[in-house]
Image 1 (cartoon, rainbow, N blue to C red):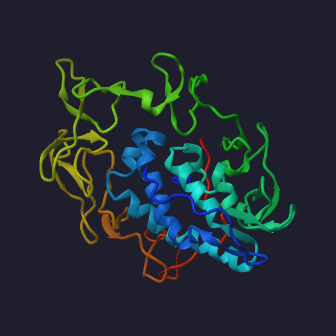
Image 2: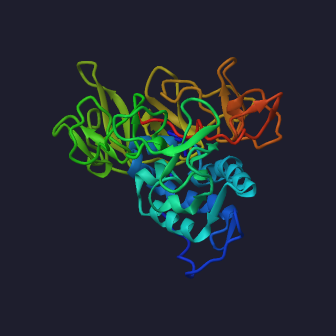
Length: 366
């Protein structure tokens, strides 16, 4: 999944019996998880881990929709189609038993595996690349084990070695460390590593107020219900709500619990309202009421909320006229812009499949 966003713990299957047969030079394993069942399994294994891996950003990113449904439909419309095409072309062999091990790793909360699925750790063997070093490629899955499709800004890329710390890169997947920052592979920055002004790796937050080092998100979210959250993060499951101003005109913010549909609310991060609703305010104060997010054909939700221009899960805000338009559209649906399509490609007014090149699938960490 693309940084980012590329930018998400339930393990719903046990390992299959040992042993499998393959179909020649490409093809699909006879045992293990069928490729078409991967999207639902990946969604179930990752969505509960998003707050663990991305902290408040994980909460924010799923506050408007059902994460499982979103991840599943995105994989169905993008990655699965590309992987199946590579299998059919004989450049990749899929291993369903290895994919089950991959799902277990995702479900266990391996944040780097979630960030770079399916090209890290136990996930890598699920797709055996059948191309040779130096061959043109469209996806790292096509390259030999331990290799990477080096794009260098253009498609197709070339199967080569992963790049070492300090070498130039265009995406996380090109680096052996899994981290590409400012165009250069850098070392993993995890627990106990000094962070300063730099960004910690996925799964960690910079504790700049005390230790100045990276700490797991679970240790960074420490403020309990009712506590002041202006400078620190609320415990998991709580939101930081702006409740007013003090005598000196400074914001008052405290950790609060989620509220029910239609209830009174305050501007908060993540939104305290149920999925599909937002705290509708008058735009002048942080006080409001939970209301349904607007659907296609309605004006976008724009107010004091930092998520200005929000729409319901099946719509997106057109910045031109600030109206919600249909989104999450599958191949063949009518469209006016790339953002409306699950494939992120609107061609001649119709959502179309991407070319198959994975150049833009992986982002960088900075």
